Amino acid sequence: MEELDIKSRLSNNLKNIRKEKGLSQFELAEKANISEQTINSIESKRLWPSDKTLSKITTALEIDIFKLFFPEKDSGFSSKELDTDLSYSVVQSIRNLVESTLREYTK
Image (cartoon, rainbow, N blue to C red; front, top):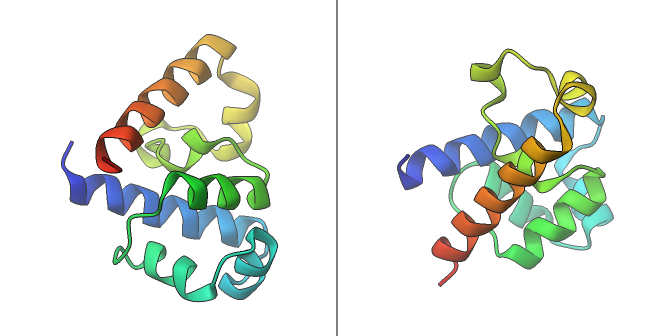
């Protein structure tokens, strides 16, 4: 997977999850204690967020970080189905992969 693919996945998932939660970019930014411009830049693929920023966003959205990187369209799962259908070990594997990928991109 290439960097642009990862940015696209992050961008699309963030935007979709934010909208599912009924939040504007401004509301999410306020909730996450980051700037609206940061949310806009991530969603438009102009910014790769730090791990701290991702943590703030996922906390504000009340989701696990893997949901920002999971290929939801390819999987056939919706966000709600992921909550109930994925086993703990699969979730852990995805988290480990995402954390490893983030470490590589934030070096």
